[in-house]
Length: 245
Image (cartoon, rainbow, N blue to C red; front, top):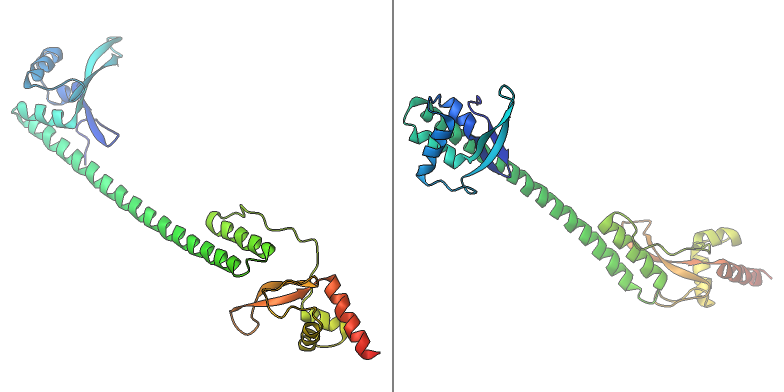
C-alpha cells in the first residue's frame, strides 16, 4: 500500500499529524483557523488529539501541531466532503486493517510459542516426576535419593541445581570382583549372599557395598545391582581363599 500520509504506529494505536493531514487535503484556509474549526465537532483533547510542537527548518521556529487518533483523522477527512478527504479516509481504513492483520498474526505466533513452551515444560515436569518417584523407591538410601533429586532438578531447569553426592569410595560389580578371584558373577553373588556380605534385598543396607540402579543387559528395564566396596571385595577374596585352602 502506497503511503499517502505518514502515520505512526505506537502501542497498537495509529496516530496522524494534523499538519500532514492538512497538507494532503490541499486546504487554502490557514492551518490554525482550520483546526480550530474542526474542534467544533466535539473532539476531546487528551482523548482524540494531543498538542505538540514541530520545528520548521525554513522558518527556523517551532510550529504548533497536533497528533490525531486515526478515528479523529477519519472523521475530519469525511467532514471535508471532497475527493481528497475520501482518499484520506479510505487510506486510514486500510492502515487500520493492516494493523489488525499484523496483530492477529503476532497473536497467532505468540499462541504457538506459548503452546510449544507448555509442551516442553510438561515433558520436563514428567521427567522430573519420574526421577522423584525413583528416589521414593529407596527412601532409606539418602545418597540415592540425593542423586534422583539432582537429576529431577536438571530435568526441570537444565542444570543440577541440587548437587550430586560426592563419591570418595570405589565400587565394583560382581563381574569385576569375579575376575579378581577367578570365578563368575553368579558364583560371587551366591557366596556373598550366603555369607551375609550381599544383602538379600535392596531395602537392606550393608557395610560391604551399596545398591545401584542400572540398565538390564537384556532390555531397557531398570534393575537394582549391588556393588561392592573395598571392604566387600576383601571379604569375598577371603571367602574364596578359604574355599581353596
